[in-house]
Image (tube, rainbow over all chains, first blue to last red; front, side, top):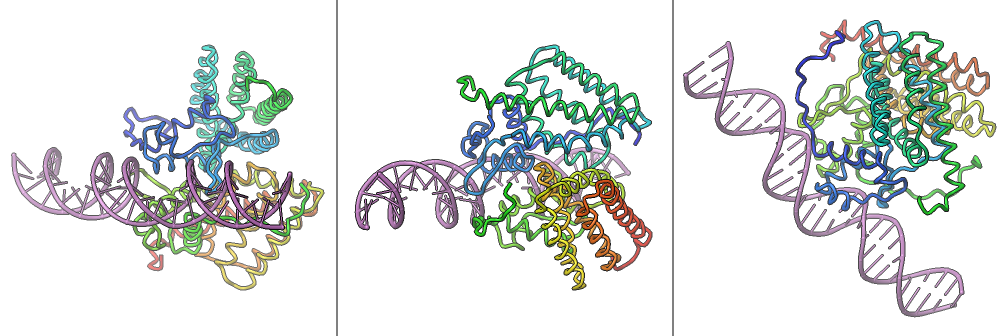
Length: 233
Length: 233
DNA sequence: CTTCGCCAGATCGTTTGACAATCTGTCACG
DNA sequence: CGTGACAGATTGTCAAACGATCTGGCGAAG
């Protein structure tokens, strides 16, 4: 692993299906597609200006990632999270993101940490714009960098599943309360601890980061239930 | 969670796509489809007696699970494992399967342990038939039971990704050496330790089970490379 | 009033057929 | 030998049609 990016990278084919997947993801992240909402092939195809089979393929991909949920013959809906699921995700994320972070910390080339620093810079910049949608994306990018830069192929394969769950949690976060300064501090600290190489500290920080985040989201969800009669929702 | 299975369960629709997925999985597990082998839509459709789009959907699902690998416009191949990947999978499996096993052990209803016992019985019975393919399937069933009976929704979602990697490892195992008695002993012990409720022992046993299995497969792969000139391959 | 059966409409699942897009290999020419 | 053109193979996409399934509404019977 030479740890250097080639100056010229191959131009990748982008299929219309992939473009559709990206568009749907954007709609999910922005809240245009809402939890529980019905997603019909024909409508989606028309909205995106693609054929129905292509829409279907894009939907199938997001179904496999967990952002959409399908029942045969009954259609597709946007996945809905719940406090129990958020806690399940956190339970799985803690050990996995710890594995990833430890691999980053142990990588003598420092390439992974450098990538993580860049992702942090981007996230901090996004937070300072006050644009919640933009910073949600950089937030996801930051965590994805932890998983991908770990170099563990299995973690890379698993990331899309995890991302879709985090995306749902971020939607809850955005919808209720947003604290950019707090977010910046937490992620700055996470990256600093990983870069420190102190493995015990990394284990503890990753755990706390994820656990606190999940508890926060669960708390917001439970407040949502209490004020479910709100006309704004 | 009442912990009881209803006497009558809804009749599930099985789409042709799902039937095709199952058939392809069987071909992968049996070795009919070999690592690195090209899988063409038109041929697969003809072999399975389905239309090309349906074959395409089945393939896409297996691509998302990791059993098949796709490059746009260049086609699909059966995924190939490698020592590095096997070790990556083990690194991820150890904490996750530990989480699952601990949840099983902590479940006061004992339902998960009962399911696991049933899966073990099935696996032991399969091993005693001497049919390697059949026992590969029950082996996968047993580990899938650990993940699914844990009750963690995220683990359930992740299982297909893990299963496809284990399936590749089992193919290596079958192709080289098979030790039913050893297999039976290892899985009997794993289940017994989980059922014992001794959490430290569970952590250690799951770790050893997965780690030793991975090292064994890696060893076989490396022997394969050494004798790669063998005409039987 | 309740329950059941029937039917229509909507949508998903699948098939057929065609064409566009891309890749790969071969051949001819400079 | 290198380059460009072309053909063939396969994938990606589209259009259209039909089969399969589900859901809701309505009328009839008890």
